[in-house]
Image (cartoon, rainbow, N blue to C red):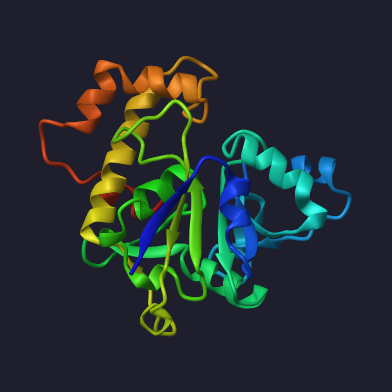
Length: 253
């Protein structure tokens, strides 16, 4: 049975995963690779967009890199601020070899929603991960494939707030035979995931109207001030029933 496990620090969570390899998946913020190379002369990474329909956009591609002794400093920087320390990202835990994990993450880039609509999904951003994975009963086992845990920091934005966001890990459980996807099958969002992403999109759109130049939702103080505002509450509880995910079918979430 899937379940969410919480920890106050990332190291606490990872230290409990005996026998699992961990992978850091980072969004390309425009400075992600340069930030990594400032800390590590030789960065061992894979572009997620490579060998996918998004291969022509490698400059915007998220990356996957192993977490080990050589990358300990990078892990410390990331865990101190998993949105602004290096770049927004999540951690993957798996028993599987690198090529299987990479192939599965690439298959997660594109999803179907609202029936037969398709779009690219930024599952590697902690806010998107929180929307997708915070409620196990609303998650399909196909998200796991060779993955044992999806790990991110924070609760779903606007639903719950804590001054010190906890690290969350959605654990697959033991039924591995039920979570392996059919070859070539595109992931389908559940109704719960669609609704969570609708809330996220409404909030991010409202923030664009609310923010001052240079402000970002990745700054937790600015985020909390925004979430306490009237415009955020109106976005969370709209008067009209509208499906904003459909408006982004040709872009990214």
